[in-house]
Image (cartoon, rainbow, N blue to C red; front, side, top):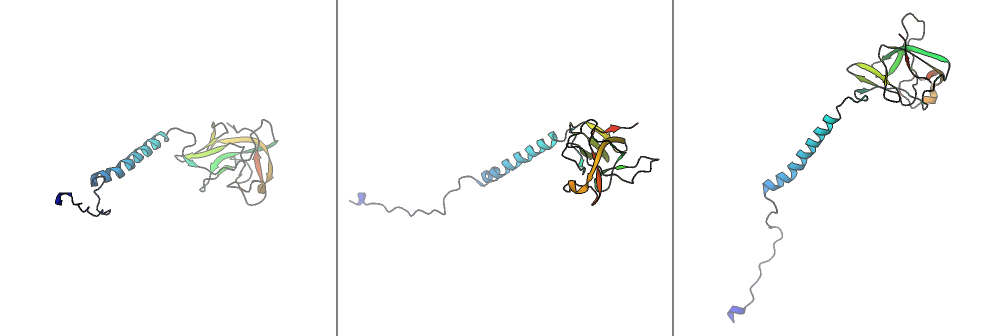
Length: 172
């Protein structure tokens, strides 16, 4: 009966199991997803570096909630499109005029501007370029207390501001 004696099973040691992967396998399991993600970000950055009109440095442009309407408002808003050191777009006086030193208009809804290679470009609500810095522009509109646009950037602290209510026209 010595042949039928139960053998004693070795104790299960949960801490000394064999590895599921070799050390090289663990390195690859970490490195491959990281390399794939880096390649994907590279592709995205190349694709997004196209000629989108919204590329370049963002410019602070105060806008109203209204779209431009032909002939709305009768006050003439005129000046030379310019940008200051804080990336705020404004209208400088037309040479030879006796207007204010700087005018900070509130532009129609959807208007935006970019600064690309030190060149300010103003776009309408259809992403069409309407003016660049140095252009003499003329619009019509009205005025409103600056408090009406408290959340908008680049406006004076007090007083009234011109509100553009028409399309921007270049003056030759």
